[in-house]
Length: 234
Image 1 (cartoon, rainbow, N blue to C red):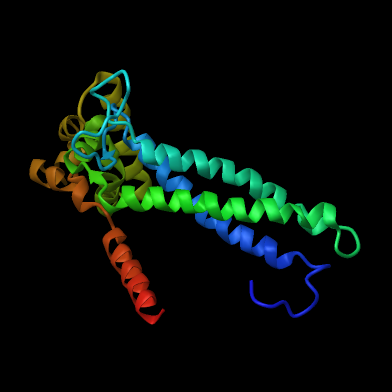
Image 2: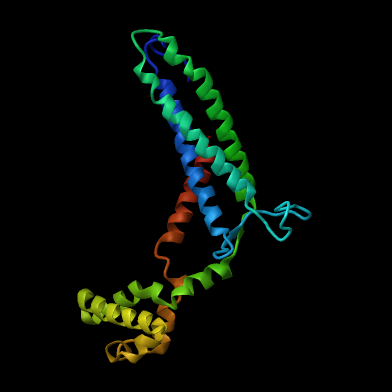
């Protein structure tokens, strides 16, 4: 917080700014932890928390491996937000040194630091050894039988037909395939407008989701490099 340039008694700005910095960190990890909870569901099963030998996931169902730490992080993170809401009210103190308002800081700020420390500790453990199930992710990507790559096929056809016409072709085939429970590849090969431009091999290559990630890997590498450089500088 440093030493204030003016009397701290009439100005609560610094305390609010500090609280909202903590709030932004809390919100980020709330999102991450909540996403882990969703992707750990049995029907999705793309992520799992670290789970040690002999660890018990449930007191009554021995097969379970509950994402307990992510769940705990979300719980604490959600309660953190109530303190943040109250903290936003301290700017309305009356005149100078309004005890009914600034004394709330004594409760709010220590609790916020404590709660955020729990969130960070939980998530540091989870993220250090997170189980990422790549094969299950690939399986889930194909739940729509290839239709998830409709955009890529449209762009490939647009070189010949133009974007709007290509969109209409892909739309027609997508609707037909989903209504008749056919795969995207099947309906595309049946359409001469598509097959005369893209043969089966070309379609297989285009419908490989692992090769349709755009600049994502490059952006991640650049971001991690910036973070590493910042750590070195600090």
